Each structure stands twice: as structure tokens, then as C-alpha cells.
Length: 114
Image (cartoon, helix red, strand yellow):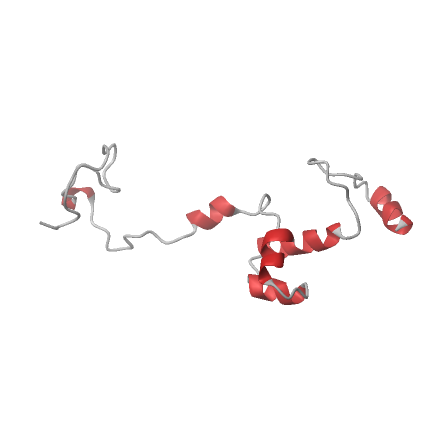
């Protein structure tokens, strides 16, 4: 373990992180789990790489969601309406996701409905 501390010092890595967690040899497993998730490796694959029996251990204990690009992942989802989504002129409700500055939902029908 002393050699690990020497390596940390040589690499200018502090003995604890911003949250007060001590850096220990086992911290490398937490880093591996988080880096696998950040690299979009499937959780089942990460589980096998880390040799865990239960995928929950990989997902809940060894993956720190803080550095993961969660907002970018949500933005990458396709739009619900897709390419054939109608323009604001076809909306028959007071609120429409395609209508700029629309108010709260008050209508009873959706695009083209009765």
C-alpha cells in the first residue's frame, strides 16, 4: 500500500477528493466503473469486466453518476413527434410544443383531432 501512496504523490493526486473520500487502491475500481459508464459500455458488459455477480453492485456502488453526461444523453433522444411532426398551424389546442410562447395546456384535442 505504501507504493500506491508514492505513486499518488508522484502523480500529484491528493489523498482525498472534494467530497472528503480517501483515495485508496480500491478507488481504482470505482473509477473503472464510472469510466465504463461514461464510455457508453453496456452495464451488463461492465458487470462482467468488473466480475460482479449482481448488476446492481456495478450500477449503484461502482458507478458515480456525477461525471456522467446525463443532460447530453437526454438531448440525444429523438423527438416524440419525429420528422412528420405537424407545424404550429395544425395545433388545435392552446398549448402546443411547436407553437412559440404557447400557454399552459387548455385544449381537449391534439393535432388534427376532433
